[in-house]
Image 1: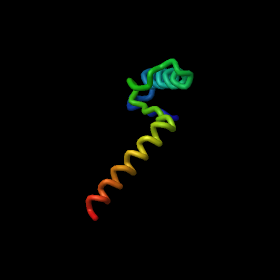
Image 2: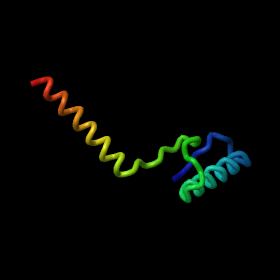
Image 3: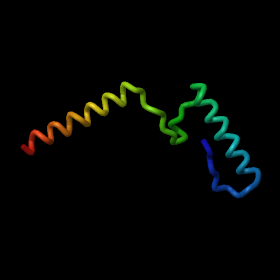
Length: 67
């Protein structure tokens, strides 16, 4: 994962990069909540299956209405 900074080259960019690297390494160890950084976590397989089934059910109900 690569993070880009809008700060000018210098100390601020290095501080930003260090903070992002520290946060990312903490997240991979489960120590940092990723939500404040705007980074989406991968959903569990059960969540993906449930969402797929819900979408499939929605399309089936729409198909029944249009027959």
